Length: 441
Image (cartoon, rainbow, N blue to C red; front, top):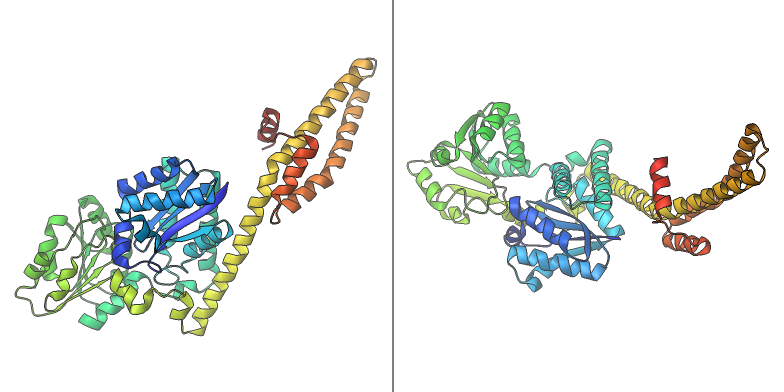
């Protein structure tokens, strides 16, 4: 079984097209199951965020897996396969591991070093677990990626290598409306990105934060955390007229804020309105840009501004930030090597268990035969003979099993396991091997 990653992100895809591919809710669950049900795929996990859609799969065949995932992404997005394929990247085995670790560390984010991606990977893993599409391979990979991301943030200065998307958006807002401390802000949505936005606004000194959400209870909960007010979604129109700054993070597939809503809100106003749309699909109708005194910044305009550089180091001018990125890359290389070594070594484990199980069977059979021929032996002698024979066999097997595990950790190590199976006519799937393994655990 091999690891495959197929995806597209803000680095390879225009935001307008990425918006059509992004999936969430029931559509995400369906994509997850459709991938898993393909004959080439044994396990599946999908990471879908505002700036990436990536499918990780354990596959039997590389080309069959790539074709299956590409076709399913095309079907779910409604895009021609050829148009979608032009923007896809494909990683296999070592490259797939390294890529997911880079994503978890924030090196592949629109804003380098942002930590929200860890929560998004954790959510993707939890969904795959709940839906039964992630097995041993993807569970271990994703858990390791989360540990790598945490280590990168704990041991390096990557957190300071780039602000969050919200922070960048607020910096742009201040260029338009001036200092945001003491201003009024409207946050549309109450999910993870909205929570981050509300918390950032609160820390920045925004005195009046209004949370609008379809599920009013969630709006109340978030408003209570940041000391704001909660309103129903129907109140967005009225709150637009009072807000200086609007952040929308719904991504429900329809426009939460239309041109007509903003046009109505601006009647009688003489001050500027700044809208930050962090959702995919977009929440705010791009047509609001044509309205006087209205500024809209979304992921696409952030991408055009240079935040989506193909190389994260290009956006870093400070030496300390450059060192942080270098440190994270070294951590990724180290952790990827450790993960791959462990995975290669695990391939030989069933063979080693089968070998020891066979040897134990031979020992027990011969001891039984000996005891039947020498029934006069007392119990102490019987035990001593039994222990001696077992020790001899264990010592004979010790060095070969240690060596095979070390060799298996090297590239092509599975060939040593195959040779061992052939020499001893082993069946790693034999019931006695499985039962012995479970007894030892």
